[in-house]
Length: 455
Ligand SMILES: Cc1ncc(COP(=O)(O)O)c(C=O)c1O
Image (cartoon, rainbow, N blue to C red):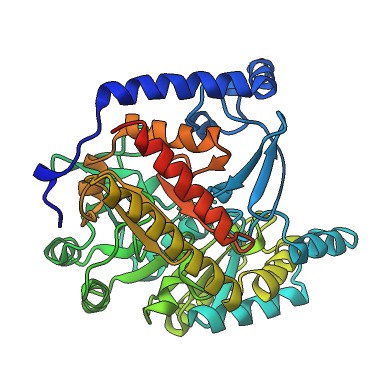
């Protein structure tokens, strides 16, 4: 840990002035995006097709024109190095050839039948090989995969509650929109139109707190713990040594199922964090990039869970089970999943992107050290991130308390104005397979320029 007392602090007056200058530069250099945004307000809420898009750092989002590999272009003709990658949906890079080819081939002979295709066999076999869970089902989004896993957990354990970590994110799953506020579980700020107070459905505890885990599961009324194996949605929070062993032991001892959400942590390699660290979940969910950004997700089950679940779905009422969907497991998404797993998200791709993420971290760390800033930078496979705190946070509560919205906004705008797209809700970079060392060094230079204006 560093001694912040002796470290250089950001000059807030300089920050505000620099932020104003960057905002003006952004607005002036994106006239076409601005014009489209103004038009879009006529028929889309807040001028965007999906509400999160208001969260980009400029006064308006850039309108994308296209993308290839790790570069995208906007309607004003700018080219960007894309380190956001559709916030993981495009971890494969944009329009990877194998996926594009599979889309064309499959679309020409039918997208959806509500019948299995042979691709489903290949994909489920490959997912079993990668993640170590023998049985698989499919959905259209990671949110749905999590929703279905939770329902199955409740159905087979006959327990009402789930347990999640403070400041987790698992998609728009009602049960998970809960945080600890002053130690009290409350609906997460922003949680709109909740069906019930999530405190009625969910226990929420801090990550890396074994005592809290004991206490939450001891009553024996929790169906499952739903966990990212390393948190990625309130910044990256790594598990402490021994935490996963404790999580597995305590869940087993209390008859609680362990559901690992690999949607983001798939950045750790072909079998995600689970394979890299030999975890043994009862269920595993994954989505977003698994079909190169086409709507697709999957959830895996251990042999024991599969045996208990199969009895429940082999009924005449399975279509009203609350699990599944008309387009889930459709032929198109399975064809693209197959192409993605076979040709894009490969061992070789992860070796390349992980090495580049290490280079990204070394570059950023060099600047942090050069300017003696109380910040730190961390890596999770091909994902990396800097945070305005001098040591890695131990849990979501600690990370959330150190969000610096003004500084976030500034660093994102500096990047955007110099042709680099970062993930909007974090200072996070995801490295796609087509990235080069020159791309990474470009980011380091931009990062240094941004810092230089503040100190
Ligand atoms: C860990 C995790 N799980 C699930 C989801 C939900 O993904 P989707 O929005 O594609 O349903 C997200 C989205 O950010 C996520 O980060």
